[in-house]
Amino acid sequence: MISTKDITFSYSKEQTFILPDLHCDAGSTILITGDSGKGKTTYLHLLGGLLRPATGSIVINDVDIVSLSESKNDSFRGKNIGIVFQKSYFVSALTVLENLEMASWLVTGKKNSSRAKRLLEQLGIISHENKLPNQLSIGQQQRVSIARALMNEPRVLLADEPTSSLDDKNAEKVIELLTTLSKEYKAALIIVTHDSRVKEKFINRITLV
Image 1 (cartoon, one colour):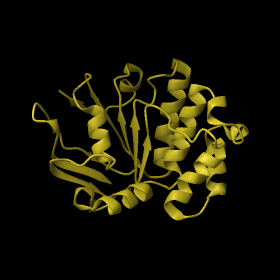
Image 2 (cartoon, one colour):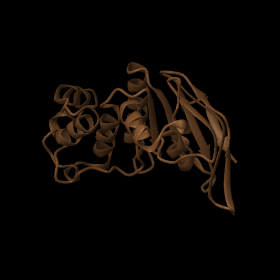
Image 3 (cartoon, one colour):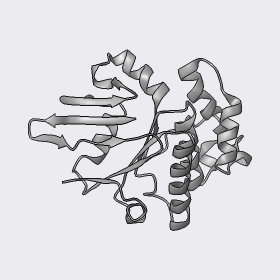
């Protein structure tokens, strides 16, 4: 579902990342681990089409996103890639439900309210659909982030340190939700983490050195 080959990226002449190849099938999970400064989040942003590599290919569903124009890349990302950022970025004036509806509207031009409510139900937070994001706990906000990332049925689900600000109980729930939903929706799941609680749950890992 997603594979890379010969990816390099530079922020400057003094800092070049040479990133290992990866392959992740639909419904499977790969962890990207490594010390700070080794390029974990950079790699995730490359996989999500938020950054463009200096060399190499990133193929999602038989499309090399590196070859796409900026506008086509934006459109492809909206339809095929869901991203759970380390920090939740919501429109603060909109309710939880409206934030999810906006995610579908930006891609399709329609508010998919039924899908939004179904995801909130699956994630156990349907009772909070009319609350503003800042009225939720950190754990609840992370669940809304997962729901938003799944709104457009992505082929690839990317999660950047999804448990870093969560206690053990909520960290366990978030990892279970991510893996369960990625299998249900047949999305390749790639998690960037330094969290030992996450590392011990998965065998498939790429460690950046």
